[in-house]
Length: 123
Image (tube, one colour):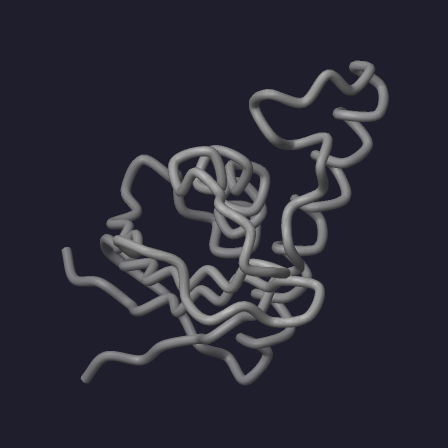
């Protein structure tokens, strides 16, 4: 039986984007904030004692804040702090994650959001 957690994360801060020209202290602050938020959300969602083992699968859904054109690989790169936060919460090295990235954006949501479903893997 597989168990899963679904977590909703905020749209990545502008400073996390690869082409951002943010000062390094602004980028560091945004990275820390996004990482802590992802860690907290996963811990909160798994508060019932769910244990993720093996090679967890992360299925991502990306809802942009509006219909403007965006580059999907840049959004994925901006999610690195979130991946690190999930790693912190699960206590599993992120090299073992199996990511299921979308081929296109989902419908826009006001403010934008990222949804990730974490499914327990097998060893």
